[in-house]
Image (tube, rainbow, N blue to C red; front, side, top):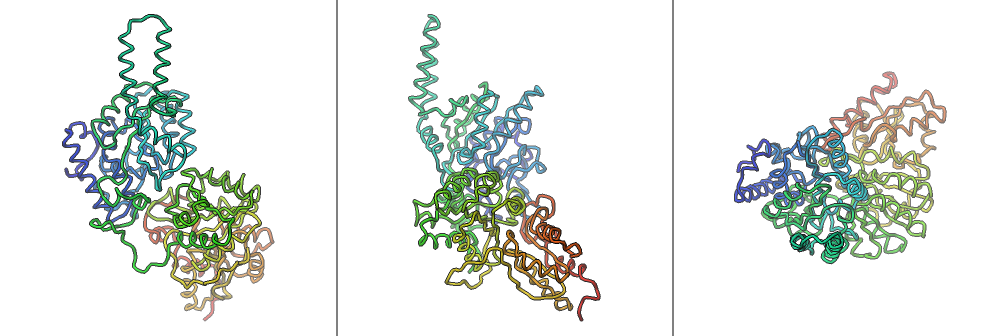
Length: 630
């Protein structure tokens, strides 16, 4: 079938089983070919081909609301709702989003990027439907990994209590990004082995209906017998205890099984949970055999071999550099324990886990728990390394405030993917952490200019015992600088001058240092001499250097790959105000007050004006003409 001709999903209702099977093969072939060029979340999408087709065949989107939790498995949904022709631009600048997006299609009814939100949103939609007396189905699709998130469990509890009509599809592939962990995962494992439960229950009900009515006592006995079977065949019956009608396990790649159970769910009052078993990566051998999470999301790859296409002789990835330095220090420091919320692969902690299995804890998609658990470790004299993406640290904000900073505990927070992340877009851009951490008492925040300084900052964080300390580092690879063999400590709050100049000063750190240095070099050719400072400690700042700079009364430009409002530049403005430097000219560059969409990072920086050229233009405007030197 030509997938480019699909406009909307109603055509599925007319297809035979053979045609549906053929369509599934066509979609898998399409995804493997397209994603080999653009990269993307191939594993999750190959696993939900039949499930997505079945949902769109059995329901009427967008009148019926299909919500995709996390949303990285919505590519098949996008194809069936008329967006196949846009896949060449998937996750590219101004192209098709890798997640559901309201402005893309009326069929995208919920925007996601973070996990465990679909059930709460679905409950809101179900309540709105009932208040407005409308008639529609609400179908959140949530993975077994996302179900470990506390927000999802809170929603399950509320949905079951309110008895709202809703069909929750549990897409159980036994993996989220990394193999799932936790007691709930074990419950699902027992459920997978209990496929005969519903058959036995139905047979029992047929048998009981044949018995002539002899009063309430027999009916009560029958109900107790059914309950006994429930506990006999499915240990715990977790979901039914929460108030759901449980259907499953269902073969997520068998159309007949899917259609039969979906139709049964549609006729059932109250909340229903369809437990669907799928295989992540199905239909493409490299992804299907993956057990480490490599094929959850990839860059471009070679279709024939499955080899990921990577730059030749690229410098080490930042995540690997940081985690391996922690691992190196852990050999000498028994206090070091690594904690991550379901990101051991992305944060490159598999080597640490292999060497120190008793000191590595993947807590699942539970950022709040990870942060407070790290705080608990710190109370006992341990040195927890909390490896967490900037975008996911947002989910643990209260725990950082209440449990880590307030108690001034020695937690080392490794903030991965700090700054623009590119293809994952606005839900994942790591640009808010400075603004939401900087105002918290006790915390130290730092970011290195290169990977050599990065390894020294890891050592600094491990040796620091005066409270919480956060190390920001970007996505991608380092600069390829020479690495010192011996690790050293960097004095907390110390900055360094990278280039001297008396006409003005650029205060910057991390990824924006190269563009600031390039701008200063260009300005020097014009007779303008700009000092470039590596403001590597965002908090505390180097107040001695700031006093010295502001005493010179020369213009200051702050540059940061983070939000301007409440960011590092705001801290410099506050310093000037608090110390009476009211005549100092200070300008700020950074991420503007809007969400930044997906695309190549360099193109995004150009779009928002965070470039060498704009630094040159801004600095030139700040320096009086008479001050410029020939």
